[in-house]
Length: 389
Ligand SMILES: NC(=O)c1ccc[n+]([C@@H]2O[C@H](COP(=O)([O-])OP(=O)(O)OC[C@H]3O[C@@H](n4cnc5c(N)ncnc54)[C@H](O)[C@@H]3O)[C@@H](O)[C@H]2O)c1
Image (tube, rainbow, N blue to C red):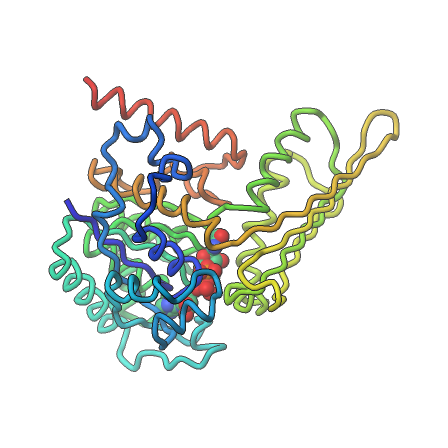
C-alpha cells in the first residue's frame, strides 16, 4: 500500500526538512519522537514512512542544493540528492493576493478559474498514476492566504464551484484544496489560512467523502501558552497581561513581516488565551518580527503578569528557542499518518481527534492542549478496541 503526499510549499524550510529526514536512514528513533509510532499507535497499522511517495508545488524556482543552503537547516550533501530522487515537482499556481505574486513577483496564471483547477487536477491524477499510490493527502505548508470577508464565503460545494467559475476566491490555497478534494485526497492545513473554514469547502469534502484537518500547526510558543493558560486558570490566578514576541529569521518570518499575512497568523496566536481563560485579559499583545540572523532557530519571549490574593502580584518570563523545521517534523509526520488512517477508514469532514496538533483547531471550541492530547489518546484506544474485535 503506497500513499501519496502532495505538499504546497515543498521547497519551504519545513517541507524540505521533513521529507529529507523522513527519507534518511535512521536508527530506530521513530518511537521516541513520533506519537504515531508509540506502542499503542503501532497497533493501528499506520502507513510506514517508507511507503509514502512525495510530490509538491512551489513557486520558488531553484535546485535542491540551493533550497537547502538557503534554509541552513540540513547540509546539501547528502540531503539534496535524496530530495531530488524522492520528490516529484508539480507546477505551482499563485494569484494576485498570494504572497508569491504580491511580494515575490511570481506571475499569476493567465487562464481562468476552471481551467486552472482542471490543470491542477490533471497533475494530481498523473502523480497518483505514476507513483502508483492508493490514497492521496494534500498538505499545506505554503504561505497563508488572504481571503475575502467571511460573509462572502460560499455555503455549499455547488456554490463554491460556481464562485470559482466566476473567478472569485482567487487564492492558491483554495484552488489546491478544491483540486485535491475533487481527486479524492484528504487535506491537512498546517498554515494559518482560513481555507478549510469556508463552509463550501467543508461541504465539498463531505460530498467527496474525504477527511480534513487544520488549522495552523502548534509546535512551540502557542503550545506552551495553551498549557500555561490552563494551569493559571485552574489555579485561579488572574492574568492581567501576556506579551508574546516571535523572532524568526527564516523565509516564513519574511512572509510574516508583511502585515497582510501576519494578521492571519496573529488571530491564531491570540484567540486561544481568552478562550481558555474564559475571561478577557487587560493587555494581550502578540508580535512577530523577521530577524535574519536567527535563521530557522525561532525565538519567543513571553512576559506574563498576574494577580494573586489580596492585591498580590507575580510575573513569569519565558524564553523559547528551537530549530523550527526539525521541531515541526514529527508532529507533521504524525498528522500525515493519522489522516491517512482516517481516509482509509472512510472518515469524512473535520477530524477533531487531531485538534491537538493545531493552534486554531477547526470543528471544536476546545483549546487546551492537554485536553486535546488526551482526546487523541482516547481515539487511538477506541480504534485499537475496534480492530481487535
Ligand atoms: N515550522 C513550523 O514550526 C510551523 C508551525 C506552524 C505553522 N507553520 C506554517 O507552515 C508554513 C510553512 O512554514 P515554512 O517555515 O516551511 O515556510 P517557508 O516560507 O520556508 O515555506 C513556504 C513555501 O511555500 C512556497 N509557496 C508560497 N506560495 C506558494 C504557492 N502559491 N504555491 C506553491 N508554493 C508556494 C514558498 O515559495 C516557500 O518555499 C508557513 O505558513 C508557516 O507559518 C510552520
